[in-house]
Amino acid sequence: MERHRHRRRTPRHIDFSGAGCTSCPAKDTCTTAAYRVLTLLPREEHELLQQRRAEQQTEEWKKRYHTRAGVEGTISQAVRRTGTRRTHYRGLAKTSLAQVLTAAALNLYRLDAWWTGTPLGTTRISHYEQLALSHAA
Image (cartoon, rainbow, N blue to C red; front, side):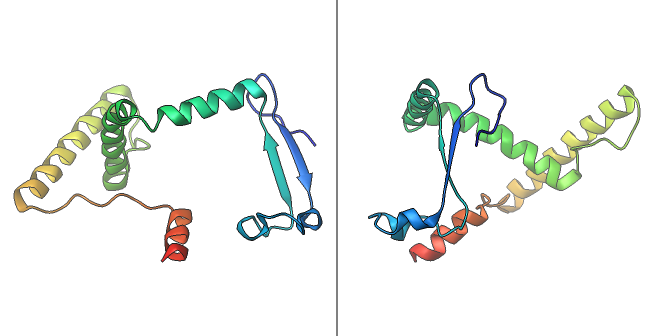
């Protein structure tokens, strides 16, 4: 069964049942789902993916990503605090004014947190990561 994605070449999906896993040495660490799918990317895409994952482990990449993480955190804070994902106004002038006021409000919120020594928040942990951490403990 093949599924199409927004790529030039589609990955290959291999569906299999759990009956073929009885003699597998990795059975204990594998999924227990009744429906199992193995996705194989074309060789070029797989090699590119492995290369990008290796780049993400370098200090240079982490330093570059640190800036993006700060920007993403600011956007996340704006959405959580003020609901800025959608504007409540019609027209460019009102929307622009709402964005300026939202930015000013975030700056005031951050100044208050800085002056009072209040931490802005912790990094969110996904449900999957929480589950993995609870099993590791």
